[in-house]
Length: 368
Image (cartoon, rainbow, N blue to C red; front, side, top):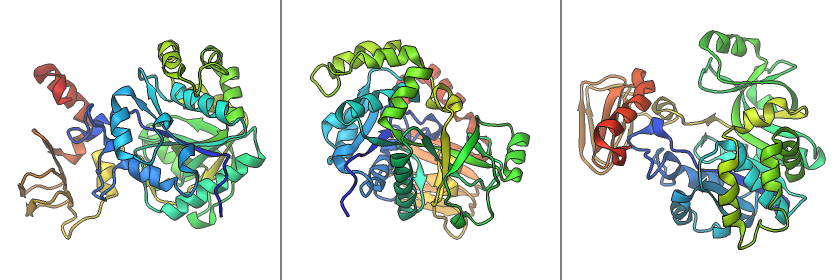
């Protein structure tokens, strides 16, 4: 069956991924790494998941100027004109505005799905089914927004939550209805997260959004007027022309640094959620990578060709080509990249950002 020519995908790939230091660094963040040991980097896996949803010419990647070359190298099938370069980081709202205006200028009838580049999806077929059903919903509900919800498995404090008016059933595979969103909420404290999960009224927010190009642009004009005025000024004169890069470079620094959740979603009146028919993780920490990695008989998650683990359990060992021998460790992170080596308890991984800052102060930006 031919793919709908009005289906478009925007992959957001501008993050730094500092919590995966030292594997993920400023010069090559985690979206460009094969951090799961599959033979494909995270952005390549994301691109692969959309092959049966959108034509390749309808897939766009938004990233920083410093990463344009690596995007082109890792996704040779992607038209270079579809690599949208941000001159400065300004969070997800300007990123999505840029892609949406560019797509709208090309096809005002477009339906767009926006996805991060660095998430784990455990079932590609379930992902395709969920997104295709979502795009069909948007096609016939052109003023509505749709977000993908993950059925919580624990009181997670690292995710945003989506509340619905009804209760989520016990069988995830039986949950495939599109449901009206009652409330978006940001990352909660642990006690509140426990209440959310026990109520059966909340999904995790996967950060995957679907809408028509017309509806998202109108939402920017209503809720982010100053930003919309900047992007509106390029209609019919800049997008998809030789002047686009200069235009974006001139307006981007004037955009608010704001997320799409705060800037648009939390106040939009017509939002629905579609439950995900696939296992998911945002792979935000070494711990989440451990949870989604294969384990050996001692529950070690090993990625590296030369690793010897002796009397060690529950560790995540992620190395390059060096021979690494681990003896007598329990629940540790051992991560090696180039000339950097991190050894720390998994329980302390929230300290990694502070560690990176201390390393930069003591030894310079080249180690960040």
